[in-house]
Length: 226
Image (cartoon, rainbow, N blue to C red; front, side, top):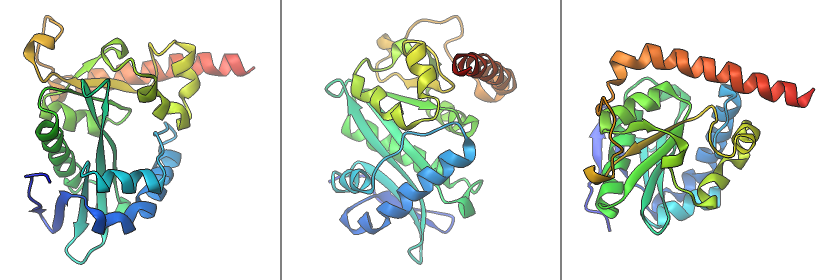
C-alpha cells in the first residue's frame, strides 16, 4: 500500500485510487475518448477494464468532489523492466478544467511514481502545452523519441491515436507529440548547453515550433492519402 495520503485541493479530494473507485472506470474512458475527438490530436485510449486494473494495482490517482463526483484521473505504467515509468492518461472533467486540479493530480502521480520506482526515469508523450508546463515544473525536459522506451508495447498505446500513421511513417522518430523525460539519475541526463528548460520563458517559441511541425507532418500525410 502506498504511503501517499489523500489530500484536499480546494474542494477536491485527490488520492491513490483503490477498488472502491472502479465504478468511475467507464466515465473516465468515455471522457478520454470524448477529449481525444474534441482535440483532434489523438490520445491512447484505454478500456474500463484496464483502468480498473490500474486502480486495483495501486497505480492510479483519482480526484473527486467531496460529494463523490468524478473530477480527474491519471495512472502510471512501467516499461523495460522498470527502467522507465510513464504517468499516462491525465484527464479532467470539462467542468473542472483550468481549476488547477490537473497540476495537483499530476504532482501526486509523479510522487507515486517516485515512491514505487525511485530508480526509474519518468517519461511521457503529449500534445498539450498545459501538460508540458506541468511536466516542466516537476523537472521533466523535452527529449527526442530516441530517449524514450524502445519497447514495442510502449508505442502500441499510440495505435488508437489519429496520428499513428505519422509515427510509423517516420519510424518512431517524429510525431505531433512531444517526448518528455524526468531523469531519476543525473548521470543519465544527456548533456545540453542549457541543462534547465525554462518552459514559461520559451513556451511561445516552442508553441510556434509545434505548429510548424504539425503543418509539415500533416501536409506530408495528406499528400500520401491523395
